[in-house]
Length: 202
Image (cartoon, rainbow, N blue to C red; front, side, top):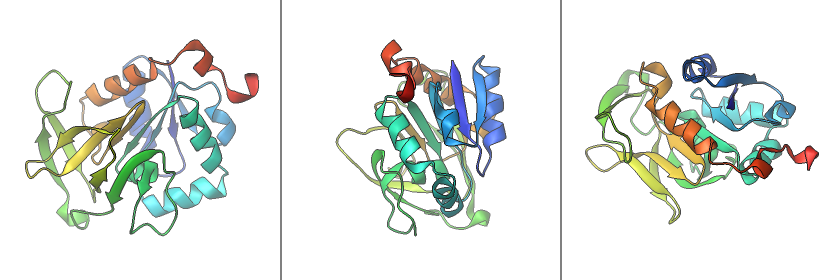
């Protein structure tokens, strides 16, 4: 399994380390052509306006959309979830629009309002997942094709899946629990051999 982590800004190194612990080949992706041949890609947490700006500056926008359209698994954590969404009213740049989600940035407040919570995750064994929320967004609305995987006690949606796309408002890479990374690699493993081919090889 060859999985990339978008390494433009944010905590990409922690994701890469978690992937390697699970036996995957982890690639820090800094150029669009590095998407070729990947089974999966993580868009990490960081600063969503900075990440979207760098995506455009480095020519990633269409490459990322094409990667998702060809069946590549993509997981966005925190800021990455914002980037994947279809509607982010308080973002000054257009998100990628790959997931049918409306997302609200910094929904829980500033850095000092960061918190942790135990989440029951649909389809995940081993008990609750300890989630770390740092200036976290939330899902304010989800389309009919989206499966909600986890919510806070008040019903706020904080993890969702749409096909091979995964989004979490929290940071699994900051814990020692690799269950979300394992789930993501399993999504990537569902691809067919034809889908594994980079677009220029077809």
